Image 1 (spheres, each protein chain N blue to C red):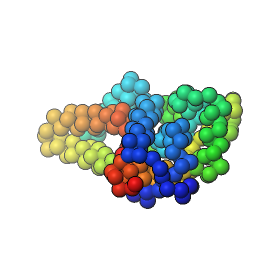
Image 2: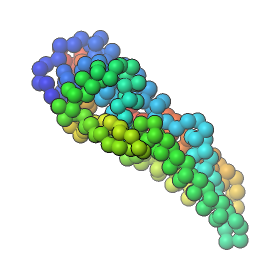
Image 3: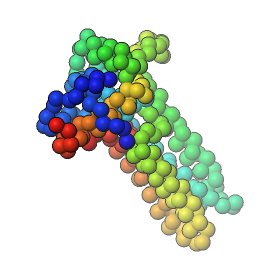
Image 4: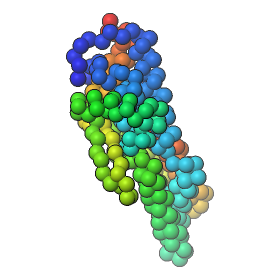
Length: 98
Length: 155
């Protein structure tokens, strides 16, 4: 089990949802994630930039089936940070942290 | 990672965890195969179990086994291909203890059912082939429908 570590970067609503989505999938396309979160291109790009800069999310652009697509995945450090953050949230709910 | 201590309340933490749970349920709905494809995969897996149990030198169930395996592989391939077209690449291998345990338990269950069915049919209990096919077919379809996104990690 991951060590509990609250992460302010992940905690923002959309970023937490981005991680919650990416942790269950190998890769997802930018447009699919955007539709799932119901946010604009610019909002999603801004959140992804923060996560990519922290090396939590990997962003790869490649040509697939004749068109350019942007694929997103969670890195191992992103997964650890996300699981640690969930553990911290559980502890807060359980009353172990002030 | 930000080392600053958290400043959120238990209510906010609970809301965040609920949001995570909701998103993982939503992701499962996006990832999982359509019902008809889940049905095809379940039925062909059941047929693999049935054909394997009923197979003997003097019957044609060996051919049935091969055909079922081909259709099963084609159905899975179709699922992964269409998922990729839709912009999602599902995970194949488990991550985390809960998922690994689920996958190992399911794998063990399927293997035991396949071999137990054949053993019982060889002993004269033909009903075991039908029972094994139902268990494996329904079991796989249920797992695909409920756990396509893996085991949820929310609190």
